Amino acid sequence: MKLLPFCILTLFGVAANGEITFSSQDVELVINETYTIVVQSSQGELPVNLNITSNHTDIVSFTPHYLSANSSPPWNIIATGLNPGHDVISLVGNSQIDVSKAFIRVTVERSKELATVSVVVGWIYFVAWSVSFYPQIYENWRRKSVVGLNIDFVALNLIGFALYSVFNCGLYWIPSVEAEYFEKNPKGLNPVQLNDIVFSLHAAFITACTLIQVFIYERGGQRLSKVAGLLVTIFAIIIIISFILPFFNIMGWLNFLYICSYIKLTITLIKYIPQAVMNYKRKSTIGWSIGNVVLDFTGGILSMLQMIINADNYNDWASIFGDPTKFGLGLFSVLFDIFFLIQHYILYRRPMYLEIPGENVINVSQSDSVESENRDEEPDERPSARPVVFSDNSVYDTRTERENLLQ
Image 1 (spheres, rainbow, N blue to C red):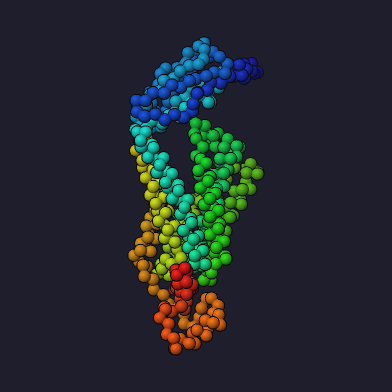
Image 2: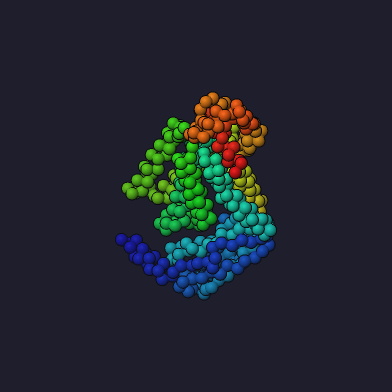
C-alpha cells in the first residue's frame, strides 16, 4: 500500500512535467564543425538536473554536460565533430520527466565531397540495376523464344523480389509495423527508403513480365525443375505458417517481414546456379542476355564501391567486416556476373550445335516445301535452317534467329 501514493505521484509528475525534445534527431557534421541542438520542454522549468551523455567520447564533444534544475527552456547544446563515425547524444531522464525523444543521431564525416560522390554512385547503381531487367525482356521478344533462359532462375527471381517488396512496403507504409520496429530500435532509423520500394516493386513487375514471356513464347519443352519446385514449396510453407502466426499473437508482423527478407537473401544466394549450370550443359549463352549481366555487374560493383566510400568517410569499417551480409551478397552476385561474362565471351563464344535432321520446331508451309524440292535447280547458299538441339534437349531454331537478325 505504501507504493500506491508513490505511483500516483509519479504518474502525475510525468503528466505535469511533460516531455523533453530535441530540435532535430539527425545531423551530419564534418570534423571540427559545430551544431547547436535546441532543447525544448513542454511544461517549462525542469524539476531535476538532467545529464547529457553520448555513446562515444572520441567522435563528438558537447557542452554543457547537464541541464540545471529550475532553469527555463529553451536550452542549447553545442556539439562539435571530432573524428569520423556515428554517435548518439541523449538526455538521461528519470521517473519525473519523459526524455524518450530527447536524443540526436550525429554522423561525423571526413569530407562533404566524399558524401556527394557516395550519393552520385548510389543513384548510378540504382539506375543500372533498374534498367538491367529490360535487355532480357527485349531479347525474348526479339527472338519470340525463351530458349536459353532458365525457368528456375525466373521463378526464384520473381519470388525473391515479391518478398522484398512485401518487406519494404510493410515496414515503410504500415504504422503498426513501423512502431514495432522503433520499439525494438528506439534510436534507430527506418532502414527502408522510398527508392527501395520503387526498385523492389519495379523489379517484381518486370520479372513477372519475363515469366509471362516464358508461357507465351517458345521454350523448347523446358519446365520448372524438381529441385526448384521443392524449394518453392518449402518457401511457400514457411511463408504461409509465418503469415498465420501473428493472428494468434505468437509473433509480431515485423518478424513475418524479417522471415520474408531471409527467404529473399536465400534466393539471392542460389538463383544464379540454375542458369550457370544450364549454360554449361548447353555450351552456349544464346538466349541469356549479356546486357542484363553487364548492367547487374555494373550495379553490383558500384554498390560495393559506395559501401567502401561510406566506410572510409565515416570510419565505419565494421559495417563491412563486422556485419558482412550486405557486402557479401553484393560480392556473391558480382562473382556470378563475372562467371557469366567468362561463359559468354570466352568459354562459349562459338557454341557447338547438334542438328536434328529432317525436323523443325515451327510449321513448314507448303511454299517452303516446294522451295525445298527445287533446291537442285536453284542452289541455296544460305546456312541450314533446320533446328538444333542442345545436350539438355532444348531446341533452337536457326531459321527464326536468322530472320530476326536480318530485320
